[in-house]
Length: 190
Image (cartoon, rainbow, N blue to C red; front, side, top):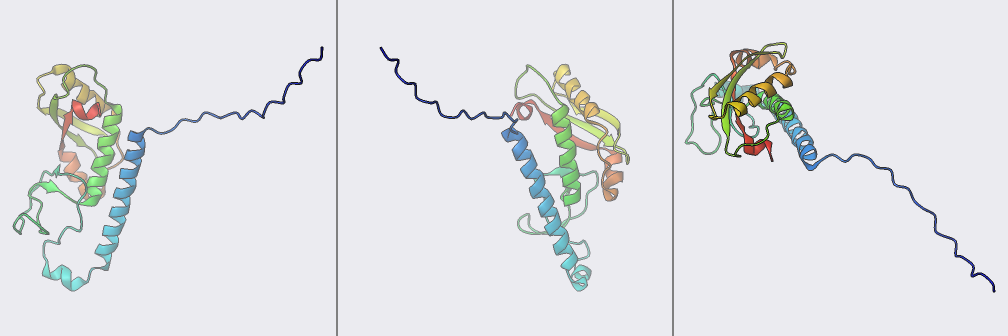
């Protein structure tokens, strides 16, 4: 009896495994790119503004906003009805250089932060200062979550994330005097 002829098998393709960035990493990269593009566009628009317009508007209207309010340590008087364009900060920092740097600091802290357990409702406020060289010069809890382990995890994350890049020269005094940040466990887990 003759053995049946075996059909030749098709060539085998071997896949190489490469790590794929997580959705969180891809979104963070996209946010950074969009902020950088927006900053470049705002700087270009500011450079193209006519000098006469600057003289008429003494306070210099802010050319853009970043993404959410950032508490500033100084307050400037504003004008307007609370909608549309206006001037003044009302204690909220809106300059793109400031926001881009602040966002970088936030991301580095979040990457260094870990906490297991606890309710997603845990929230603490922390004030911390960043020196002109990017080193943290002071950290303190301004509003406790009432969970000392959670509060300590936030302080540890800030210290682990440091040193940060040097703050923009224009805002070094502000960062040296301290900025406040809110940490929510629900955001860490997302």
